[in-house]
Length: 572
Image 1 (spheres, one colour):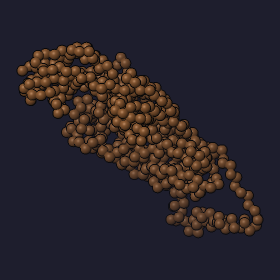
Image 2 (cartoon, rainbow, N blue to C red):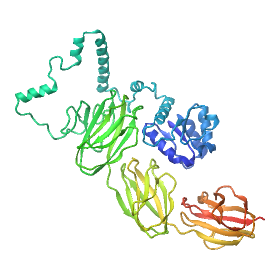
Image 3 (cartoon, rainbow, N blue to C red):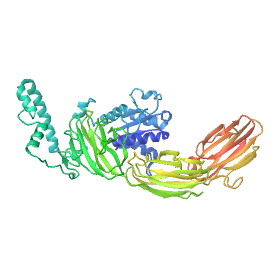
């Protein structure tokens, strides 16, 4: 059973991926990927997941309001009181679903703090029975959750005792002796020297003071005094190292949790020059999204300063060798547990490719969060380049890949799970670079893509369309009736002497190319009809004037290949 079932139109897959990743980062299990296991009926698999989900998140867009699937799924969720609607675009929600307030995510972007997103997450958690307190920060504090079900630690018992002590102190301040209270709450009122005076006294009595050791404490150990060069104002401090995961009571007791409102925790580590490190938030308790975290180098320069629920800092290059401090907390009254990860990013893996008309399958692995693989190749001017994603491991859908020319001008920049980049004409020629992996995505795993030099469209003249013409493999001429290469296109050109009606029939199509495009255009490239080989037949079409027309079969964004048989003829 999944916590959240995401209902969306196929064209909105990129939005669904981003929302699913954001919800998973908040500890929710999400069903969104409609890759159905072999042997399982599509309808049965979706219905089973829909009925088992704790709630149904419906993404409303211009496409989804027209989708029969989305509306059916939304109706099923409404009947079970499990509907959580969200506006991805400013559209009018279908009437039957308007009585439930929709989260407005039209301005939401992955990784950024957004009030409507936070309220939506709270609604989901409440629907799942995971929240018992209100939205007020104090209520969030009282209902802060840990990521584990471990027994109560001594640290937590100490926190409870501290809270009780503060409450007693507040009562005594109202009804007890003011002098007693002053002595109880002021550590210097009972005759203790203040830090400045104590240090002065020590300096007067001792000509030398022992210098603090420059060696850092063992990674993970809590430090009560700051290491050399670190500012200190009483925050909890922990020594860590690149590769550590910070979470509740790890690397040491007191880490990974904001136990008191407005408190801060400092983590510090040493790094060599020009080391790249990936910083990410793995989990957050509800309400911690707006709590800050920042990274500062040894000179006091901030490398990032953002909120825990905002855009992932991702890859940060530590340009100078030395000590770095990571501070979490402050500026927000929320309390709760969090989990952070620091991962070393390896140098890019570089490979060279040789283009040809034959598709080249390239397999690679992104080994660590933020890692990149770089593929370079050369091509002459006007080359038609085809790039298609073949497969990827789960969770890599949103991983970035980008194609740039020798001047670093972008030809495409998209995600592995988005629409195929397809065919591009390389105007300049020269050296090109294709990178897989991004600075802000923690996904790792294997992938495969194919790249090739795509031939020019095959053009076949049918002449004046007087009767019926049958098109099939090598019919009426060699090269007809087959998409031989990914991104390949066949163009059948014909003319009509006067206004005419023509009919197109789809006789036979290989199953692999059912989604390949089929369209008729006039000599000015105006589209008369557009569909696909596996869709319904166009039937009778009216060509409003005499002239040249083209029947085009193929798609620059679909890598499928196979054969087809059509029939086109003039009716009158």
